[in-house]
Length: 256
Image (cartoon, rainbow, N blue to C red; front, side, top):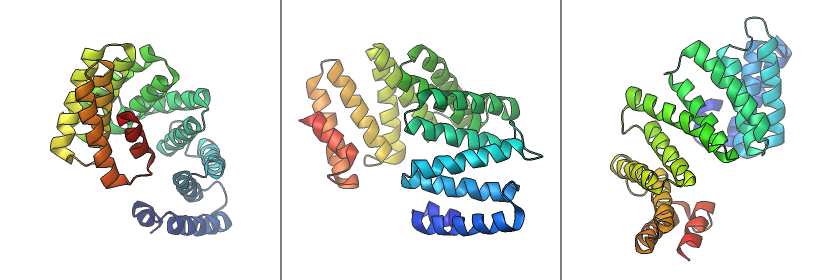
């Protein structure tokens, strides 16, 4: 029921249910039982969703330590790898990019060994590490990871799958950062066209693609094309997100 509440966006309701389960399992099973560790991770995930990074980190670390040490677990157990990924993502949000990178690499190595290079969780981990390196400014390190994820997602999911389109968009933004504006434009246009067709013009991911392509057109000196796209993104975000959402404000600044 807690998972359902979380999926419905009722984070307070989900937290209450997950905490009740966690406390009961601590008392009945102990802190290192697999079911207790699952509940600890669930509470951590909800706190993460709520923005309580301190609370989430403490629980993520407890779950990870327990999963590494509990008999039947270890560093390559799937639930351990999930805990590693969760903590890595949180450290990235906190700005601890070195700590996040170490965990992302550990998770990726474990997923490659246990699930193979083409499993969807492995591909998500490849993309996550590429994205982290991109943020750190290691564009040469990020590019082969983005390309690996994109190639595999094309093969396993097809050209129009949302995850494939994420990879196309990511690689396009990286090429833009490297100064390959023509290569970037081709990919960003492809992502936008596919998102319009599969998600519609007002979907948040479509609006991200519109905004990204507008920024690229501005860099290329196509100011009229850039303005049209930025205005479309602004209008769509006002309708779907409201005037005060950070993405709406970013679009407003781009048009100003």
